[in-house]
Each structure stands twice: as structure tokens, then as C-alpha cells.
Image 1 (cartoon, rainbow, N blue to C red):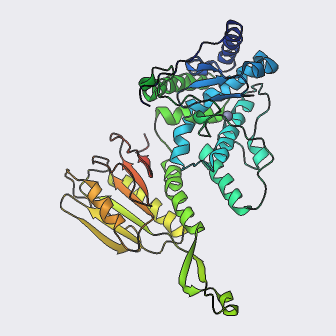
Image 2 (image 1 turned 90 degrees about the vertical axis):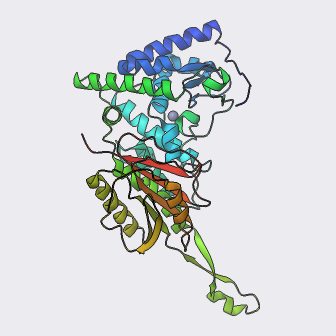
Image 3 (image 1 turned 135 degrees about the vertical axis):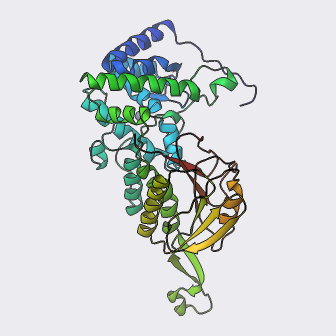
Amino acid sequence: MGGRSTRIAPLDPADAELFAAARLRAARLQPYLATAVFALVPVASPGLGTFAVDRYWRVYVDVETARAWGVEHTAAVLVHEAHHVLRDHHRRAEACGVTSTTHRLWNLAADAAINDDLIDDALPLPGGVLPRHLGLAPNGLEEAYYGDLLDDRDLHEERDEPAVEPPGCGSGSGGAPADGEIDDHPEESGVDGLDDVDAAAVRRAVAHDVTAAASRGECSSPGLVLWARDLLSPQVPWRNLLRTAIGRPVREVTRDPHVDWTRPDRRADSRPDFPRPGVRHRAPEIAVVVDTSASMDQSLLDAAATEINGLLRRSGVRTLHVVSCDTESARPQRVRRLGDLVLRGGGGTDLRVGIDAAAACRPRPSVVVVLTDGETPWPAAAPHRTTLVAVIIGEHAPLPVGPGITAVRITAPT
Ligand SMILES: [Zn+2]
């Protein structure tokens, strides 16, 4: 940020030669990934002990380590780093609510998903974590692996960390930034790297190359083919995304024990002078804001409502607040489930009013889910101590971003 301008020093000629050789080899290992591999911007990182990648496609290269690996292994590692940025692990980690305390688990999940694919494609990786090392089934999605690792950690809170070395692939993997990572956005700082627009173009080009290779039988990474198909025809498994987006904050609430002075601790009998509060686990409070003035596909809306009902029932939520938000008003109601949603059509809604009304409900909701076509202004951040899950029904409106906001798009299968 600001006017700081960090220039990336070019690699020494001998190092540049090694990097070029490894990159060329990488492009041969997975030819359909060539556009991505050549988009990576190398940054010399002596002493890093490995390679890492940042979210702007800068790859941090420890040449000494690369020499020890040799060209073949280094090429496989470059492919691995390209997969992180190609699969948009940075943004997906954010969408999963990954924090500085869970970075490492996400990085493991992402590495396992990538390496699983690369091993299928017989890439010569110099080690690296695989799903089976973490007790996970093969061919899983990063988000699912991460959820499993989190659950596992919660079950064995006192247990030591898994006996796998922290991989530390950098911010481009959705993990913690690597040592010495340049944090500057390419556009603002003039430092080389790919911004979101460039990255999206590279992803699309690679997705085309992957599907073409797959149709010729030249790509044997099932995960990569799925990724490419999803990217080109967004039949995103939105149910999975919705489950993650709502399930995560809900689980956080259920997990936090609630200190309750109205139910004194029974053990306090022995020390009557020192009353202590009881502790109980609370059911999460959920509010759903429905944009009733929007023009949304009724079947998609019903599908979303069914999914949300199921999710909340499984989480022990008995009732929820529903705020119907049309052009005139935002009316909160207390209901047992999301029923048939009446849509009137029309426009001009400002859902911020509905979101405020939802956040003002008592008991205060910890999660506010918004069902909308997205044609509305959004708040800059989720309401205080609330997760805002924006469910955008339809293809066109942009997804909102901001602290505490997660967005899921629901589109019809094509
Ligand atoms: Zn990695």
C-alpha cells in the first residue's frame, strides 16, 4: 500500500538458467498448465528452504534448495505452486473463514488435494503431504479436507499436531505468508505479479487447455479436470459451498461454551461463598433476510431454502428469524423453518435495511443469511459479531466482499 515501490531483483544468471530449465520442464510435465507456469514471477529467496507462492503469482525460489532437488523435482514443485494460485486457494481459504490459527490446516488440506492429483499424474514430487498421511480419502475437495482436519483437531484438542512438517506454501496457498513475502498489490506498487483480472484470464486459458487435454485422454488428474469444468461451466457444487459458509460460523457458536449465571455450577455447592456460573452450549441464532422484491428463479430459491432448512435442523436450530425485505419495509418474523417464499418482483431494494433489522433481532443472531439476486448495495462489513452469508441467486450480480462476509452464488445447472 502507499507509494512504496518494491522492485523484484532479477535472479542471478546461473540461478535464472536453473529456474528457466525447471520451468520448461514443468510445462512439459503438465503441458495444459503451461500458461500458468509461465505466468509465475520468480523472486529469489535465499534460505527459504523450499518454494512458496504469494497470492499475486510470485513464486519464492530458494535456488540452493532447487539445486539439491535437481531440475526434475524442482519442476514438479513449480507445478505444485502453480496449482495453488490456479485453484485460487487464497480466496477459497478466506471463504472458508481460515484464520491465522487455522492457516496451517488449510495449507495441509490444499497440499493434500494438489499432491493427490500430481501423484495420479506421476509427477516426481520431492516428498509432500498426501491425503492418506492425514487420514483422508483420495480425490477430495480442499474445503472438505479442511473441514475434516478442523473436526479432527476439535476432537483431539489436547493431542499434538500431526507429525507432518508445516509446509508453508505462502499466501497464494491460503496459508501463512512465507518469510520475506512481498505484500504489494501489483497495480498499486508497480511490482511484478498478477492482479485478479490477469489471474482470472490465466485460469480460463488453463481450464480450456485442461478440458481439451482431458478429451484427448492426455490429462490424468481427476481433480484438475473437475476444477476446469467447474470454472468453465459454473455448475459449482453450491450446496457444498453453502454448507461450508453457514456450517462453519454455526459450528463456532455451538462449540463455544456459554457462561450462564442463571444456572449456577452445581460444584459451587461446596463453596457457597463463591458462586460460579454454569456453562452450557447454546444453539446458534440465525436470521435469514429474503429479498422479496428481487427477480429470482423460484426453483433455485426453493432449492436454497430446502438446503438451509436441512442445515439448520442438523445444527439443532429450532427457530429462526426471517426478515422479508421488499421496497417498503423489512419485517422480522420468528418461524420454525424457511417456508414458501413469496416473491413480488420489482426492484430498488436496499438490503442493508433488512440486514440491520436482522442484526437487531433478539436473541441476537450470530449468522445472517441473505437470499437475493444481488442487485442491492451491501454493507462494508458484516454487522458486529455476526457472520454475513450472502447467497446470490443468479449469474450476473457481483459477489459482495468485506470483513465477516462470505458469498455463495447459486446458478441453474446448464
Ligand atoms: Zn503447497
